Image (cartoon, rainbow, N blue to C red; front, side):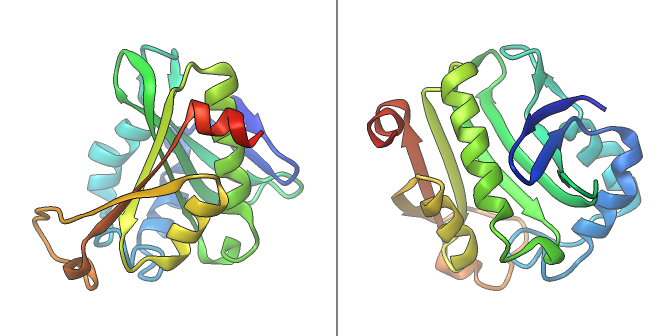
Length: 184
């Protein structure tokens, strides 16, 4: 399995089809999915989710999603996303993460996010990192802030199925290359 990035405690590696059971467990934990969506079926995992996670972006010739493992044990923790919003340009990317409950509160999300942001600006030609979440998802908002992103706007989306808390809308955060350079 191809390693994309290592931190002090994490290994971010390319997904493989063999990760389907880990992903199903993650996507079927109601607390993990509380602010995201409904549980994922095996069929949806195989036909929709895995192809998205295995996709290589032409501007990087690599993926935009990586499996996160604990460095010392190899335990699957979840995944991180640093994905170009347009296939052929790395200028604007979306940051995301989904970790299992055992990994919550241990700083993994911030550690992985900061490392991806740094790699994006240093090596991948990124000019702006964006992220969004439901307005009521205070944990995710805090991770975005601790990773250097700042609040940009509040918005409402037209979602096919309402999730508890979605009536409060969503929030968008971002970090530009200039802001990142100033902070470092």
